[in-house]
Amino acid sequence: MADWRVIENTGQTLVGLIERHVAQLGIPNVGVGVVTPMAFASLADTTDPFVSLFLYQIAGNAEMRGNPRRVLANGTLGRQPLPLELCYLVTAWGVRATDDVIGDLPATQDEARLLGAVLQAFYDNAELDRSSLFEVPGLPVWSPEDGLQIVMETLPVDGHYRIWDATKLGYRLSLVYRVRVAALEPTDVPHAPPTREAMLETVP
Image (cartoon, rainbow, N blue to C red; front, side):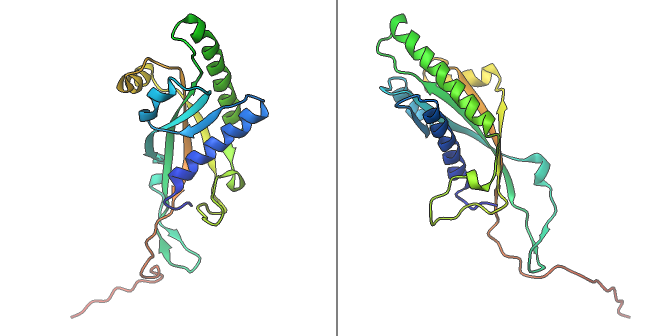
């Protein structure tokens, strides 16, 4: 179960996966990062290929949300971690030297190549154990039992258009992934041990 840095470290875990896979494929000068739509306008004019990850939704895992309280190692009852699912829009940005067909063709080929690399990277690493999760040395975030699952999803076309319309840019082909389950550990400490025996008495 991770602490409050779970969202940041999940994003950096995905960035690292893509960076390593792109390097293995020998695709040069590719930047990768978690961004917001504020950066999309500048990425449309990028001078180096770039893969952006936009975290557009954070949701709770419905299946695990109702889990009962857990018994901790000291015998007290504790709250279950908050199970999170993080949804990312992954977009490849090619370099367009001009705004005509001549400039668009090579950029489109680069974007197709990069999206293929992302597909392969996430498919090959669909199940991540603790050793594969990003963490800054000296700043522990994850528990030994933590892991992530990367699942490809299909966002309806109108959902894609709503995102791109809000950025004032034209529609761009993107991939959608749901990363689960990133469990946020509660910080509260139980104040009393669990009830082991109950007695009912009546007072005359």
